[in-house]
Length: 124
Image (cartoon, rainbow, N blue to C red; front, top):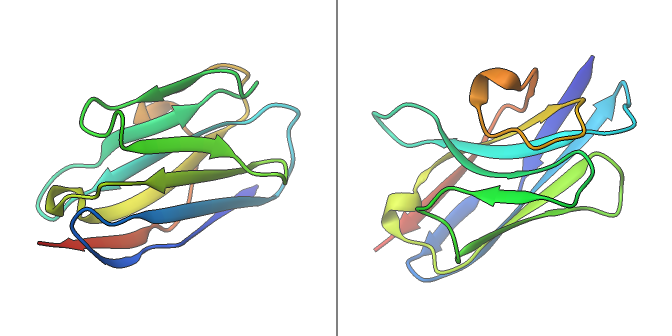
């Protein structure tokens, strides 16, 4: 099994920044695609950003493009989400996801491993 632990959430004012981290432990794989999703109050969970198992490809939701950056950590199977110019509509629980594939995954159902989530609240 793989365990994912997110950190870095919190309360921030609009136009501020936060950096989320996600670290995987347990079973290791040679390639791990990782992604971030979020669930806002009263809404379904939605895709935010993803990075391929090889690390060379990234993809973003239109709503965060140009403001959020996904990147790999120094430790294998870790990932960051740098969030700049935050807006109140970015308020949500953010989830880290992972799966043992080389490519890029942007569909929630394709991820086998999930973290518990970290709350991000953006005040206006």
